[in-house]
Length: 194
Image (cartoon, rainbow, N blue to C red; front, side, top):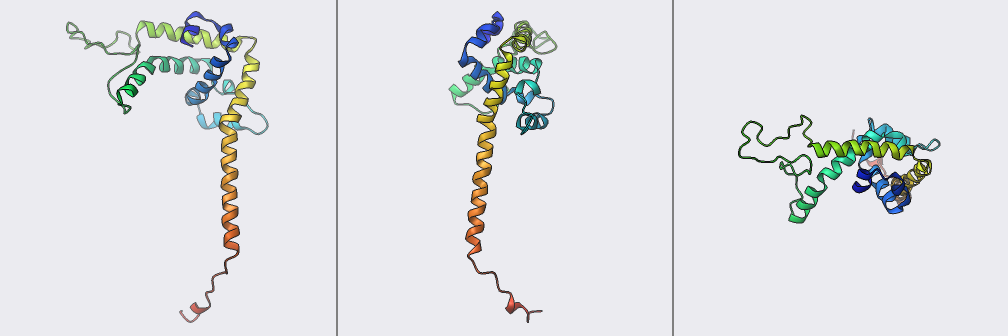
């Protein structure tokens, strides 16, 4: 995906079904978290009549920033998992946000020169991401991809939630049916208590 973004290969993205499926997973797992109001966005995705796609509740800037963060950090996350240290660490492990220790640098202490904390390569990749994801939405195949996103959300999020609710309802019905055969409590002996 990173290569497609750097080359601006939107048509190749739409031609590869594995990348499209992978990206739907990224959208729903991470980009939804960048929506302005996640609760409203989720209710729009679940609306029974007027279903919206993830593309309607987020924008291309959300996609660009989240993908920048993912690509920046994936190597560090993989390294921590490989070392068996999956816990949080204060060590900055990002590709474009690393703190580089230089003995001659006494003033900046290895900090990046950009006030954003991103290196020039990271900022260039972010610019490429913004262009790519805006172009992705302008492509002729995007309307069909929006329909795929609605189907993906239903199959992977809404259907399991509805199935879970149905199973919980059945459990309540069985529990209440089991209690229906029990005799009602008799409090007659408590009349003389007061």
